[in-house]
Length: 156
Image (cartoon, rainbow, N blue to C red; front, side, top):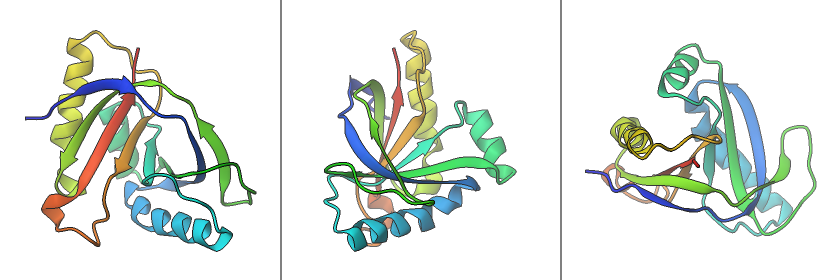
């Protein structure tokens, strides 16, 4: 059983990289972004996030299958920084979000999404922005069954 919460998300300044392709790109994009932050001496202020621009589960599944998903990975940092052709910097505003935490492998996250979408429907909420997956721990440091992923969907 998943516990859904509604809360205000924090405001974040983030560095970002974005590509078109399958969602499996996330696994290579996060280390690239972390290396960039380290090379530039940036102060990382939170865990990496994936921003999903496909708004429904059906859109997401279709985009992943066709390898044309809008894959955006961000890393919170302490303040603005220089940009280049691969890395941009912007601010994610404070928003009301519905959230759930999934414990286990990334491949088994579907029931958490289903519970979150059901809660949004049951509470007559409207989705107002892209979905965020926040990676709360590092799969290289914990067993697969201990991986924690927080899923947040902006709502009103």
